[in-house]
Image 1: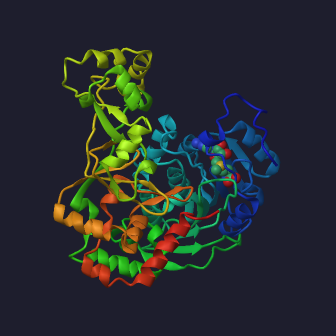
Image 2 (image 1 turned 90 degrees about the horizontal axis):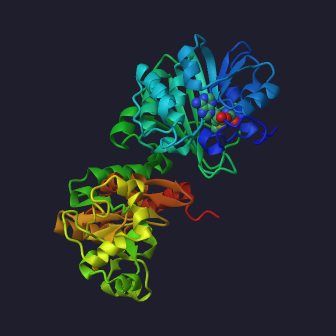
Image 3 (image 1 turned 90 degrees about the vertical axis):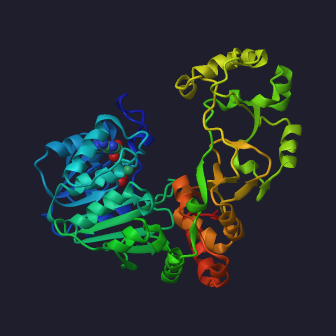
Amino acid sequence: MTLDPHSDESTELSQKEAGAYYTPSDVAAALVKWVVRTGSDRLLDPSCGDGRFIAHHSNSVGIEQSAVATRVARERAPASKIHRAEFFSWAAGTPERFDAAAGNPPFIRYQMFKGETRDRALAHCRGVGAEFSRLTSSWAPFLVVTASLLRSGGRMAFVVPAEIGHAPYAAPLLEYLVANFKTVHIVAVRNKLFPDLSEDCWLLYADGFGRHTDHLQFTAVDTYNPKSRPPPVGVTISVTTWRSIWKRRLRPFLMSADARDCYHQIANRQDTARFGDVASIGIGYVSGDNDFFHLRPSVAANLGIPLQFLQPTVRNGRALPRERLTKRTVDKWRVADEAILLLRIPKTLRALPRSVLSYLDTDKGKQAKTGYKCSNREPWYSVPDVKVPDFFLTYMSGKEAALVSNDAGCTCTNSVHSVTVKKGEAMEDVLRAWASPFVNLSCEIEGHPLGGGMLKLEPREACEILVPSALTLSAMPTRVVDEAVNVMRSWRHYGDR
Ligand SMILES: C[S@@+](CC[C@H](N)C(=O)[O-])C[C@H]1O[C@@H](n2cnc3c(N)ncnc32)[C@H](O)[C@@H]1O
């Protein structure tokens, strides 16, 4: 059964706004089989879409905000009770309680999960002891609120985004689950559950609502074969270990126990540094209008803009050489007339040269001035946070993150991180260690997958990268570390076709 996007109300949200990606039917059937134990069990799907979960069990309730989807669900699951409603409002008012819940909650990122719906969701979660920040995606509060509608002993089985393995906002969800269920089992699935969706999905099984557990169960499989039971537990993780050693992330459990032991031991060594102890790592500047603020050398010369107002900049991580950005490279950019000169006007400068004033007064300038960033700063033409760092760090990387020495006195946009050294001698150790498989592994563990095979490192994640001493590096169990790097890369689909 398919939905006709043209057939209903003009109020329908787009697929992305509603997080409306439907689960393959065999996966839906398998989750319902596990979660429903008897015919009299009452089942809830809090975001039932076209009804493909509830259709497998007649004693069921589906909630769905889309009119089109609700109509299809009513056809597909005629025995189920289907409410067309916004889930968090419905949950706040319903006296109903359930033995089981299953589904696939909408994955709406924090930028779009906002307003009253989010406030209501977060207030409900707070009321049951789960504290989410405003940076949470919708699916995590969806699961907490759903669990809070279970009867004692109840169960739930859900498709969840793979972000459950690393996102900071997944931690309050997992904390809530271990505090309220007897067992919590997460199944990581490497090959796509949804062939057409770029995001990876994992599975969550929780049983025994009203009890608690000190352990998380975790299984990593290449492919999920839909069955009425979850795959066997691969590793049982103490919640204390998950919190303290692995900073409330599950992704490290994708690699072998030997690799985890090795990583943990090296993290605990006195002579192992964290990158953040050695250097400050931050994002580059945000100009507010890249087209206006970045000039080609020929344009700057024609306008007669004095050199002191033109700062060569790195506009894109892809433009960086592997180890050093030299003046020669920047000269090549100039000769190619690339738009690499940032118009840098100090905030406090009162008298601007006529050439600069004329450029600010062009149509392009007038348009830039009204943009969101520019209109919210004073003066609008002064780009803040322009630094000339010692190094650049790529934060969206293919195979590995590059740490590139800034020998050319460039600044950088927020397309790369800026690294300013705090401890010069220790930085020598960082540079010696950087290309080692262990630091590659550390980037994989402290960073996170971005999709499309890319690895992302936020500044806070980069600060956690482990830098072992030369002695430790020389005694490294190479095979274990190399294997772990390959495993972590394979889970972010680096090199997949
Ligand atoms: C990922 S789809 C899952 C649908 C179905 N459970 C499945 O897996 O095939 C999420 C559904 O949630 C609905 N939805 C999004 N936000 C909602 C909300 N606040 N209340 C109720 N439904 C919502 C969307 O319209 C969409 O149909």
